[in-house]
Amino acid sequence: MSIGSFIKKQFIDIIQWTEDTDGVLAWRHPMEDMEIQYGGSLTVRESQMAVFVNEGKIADVFGPGMYKLTTQTLPVLTYLKNWDKLFESPFKSDVYFFSTRLQIGRKWGTSQAITIRDADFGMVRLRAFGLYSYKVSDPARFYSEISGTRASYTRDEVEEQLRNLLIATMTTTLGASSVPFLDMAANQGLMSQTIRDKLAPEFARYGVALDNFAVTNVSLPEELQKAIDTRISMGMMGDMSRYTQYQVASSIPLAAQNEGGVAGLGASLAAGAVMGQAMAGGLGVAGALGIPGVPAPAVPPAAGATGAVAGTAAPAPAADDPAARLQKLKELLDKGLVTQTEFDAAKAEILRKLVG
Image (cartoon, rainbow, N blue to C red; front, side, top):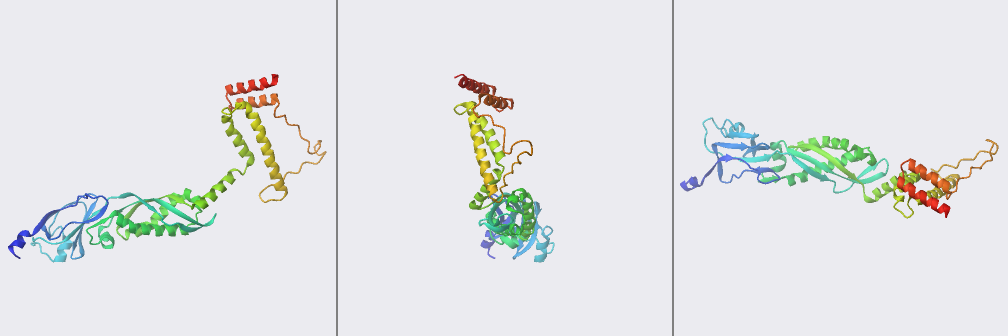
């Protein structure tokens, strides 16, 4: 070696990584035309690990701490080079740092809909989305299986591979699941844990530990979602009498805001009663015709069975009877459905019409 080459020779005394770039999981310390000074220091910070690679083989792995590089602190490298205890010359080796920080809030999702068999809807196509977190747990395996000799390896690059594993496992799990889609929302926690248990060993093969996995949303195509909404609406309107009661109760607080105020409530109730009778009559005809799902109308008792003529009913009070309207308003006041002011205004309106 010439004197000029010797002078140009550079030695490294301190080896460390400050992680000045976010999202880098593996970083190779610059070693071109440089040798590590025997007795130099290696600094591995918390949430880091360092790997020495000699002639393509992993020699030593260091966790967090500060090390003086000697034959005592490099046992495997010493064995590979057959150094004796007196060897104190600079040496050449590649040093890789790995970030072991937890990578949180990473998003995943199915780019294509997954077709599964559902107990309620038959074959359905659904998509799923969620979050997961992971970290590099075995840098030697991560180096061998994923990052290799590259100068740096980023989080985005490794997640491309992890996402493929994730989607494949998700597809298999949902395809083999017997949980109907309508019950998946209530079972998302259990589904998340099941998928995590299956993903963990797959991630470990690459030196990555899966810390958390969550399914936050499972959705259907828009056309099927509309069909479900229609089915829900029909279920809500199944009991027409309760539905009518709900509509009337909902309209009372708004009555005072309309023309006529609560005084016009009697007419609204009368109209609702007529609609209810018409709907009941329609259901009776449908039941008489034997339409599935609609009960047949009840048969009136025969004449003389109870001492009354069959079909005879007590006459209903007229809808415009002032006394009946006042009585109805009083019931609404007693139940707290109208205020005293609204009651007084309605009462005055009825009396005014009564006296002309």
